[in-house]
Image 1: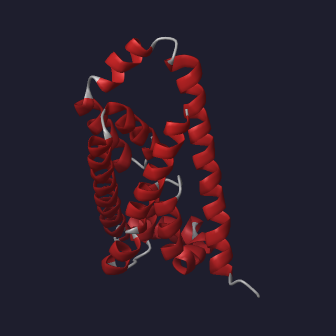
Image 2 (image 1 turned 30 degrees about the vertical axis):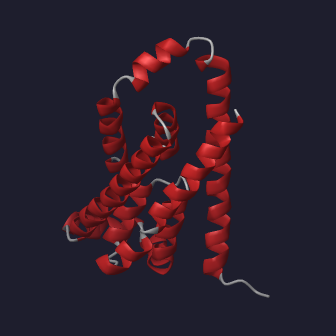
Image 3 (image 1 turned 135 degrees about the vertical axis):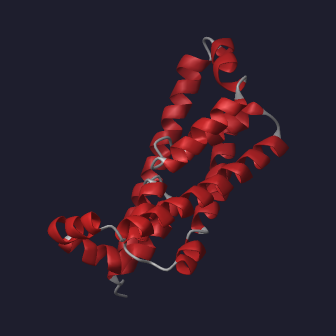
Length: 192
């Protein structure tokens, strides 16, 4: 059976995202067992005692191209309280991520109307733009499910002129990511 180019793209980038998740979880496991266990009170006071700061950092990170992987916030949420609080935090993180993705998508649509952007697109992104137009929705799915920067992908897809209704539908994969990764983080943390 011959796979289409789009399915190959989806599988290839999905595997890259899974590899990044394994790297992030491994680094967390090493941090927890090597550094955190030696001085837990320092880390607890610094990070777990100031949830408003953590939420603000998360909001800014999700707006500015997803600088900090959401899995780190999931780990914080797991250590912050019980299962109900963890679930509520995951819902908050998923909702914020989805909303920030849409905001950056709208910013991308606005930027695409600027004359300077059209000039740069024609001059420097001619070949890349064709692929973006062809695989744009797959980019949203991949970015939604993997550690590829979510907000940056939304900005690019928005600038490519995708309709909001399609974006909002395919962006729901971002929420699926939080469900899956939240479960994986929970299970991985239980092992340690």
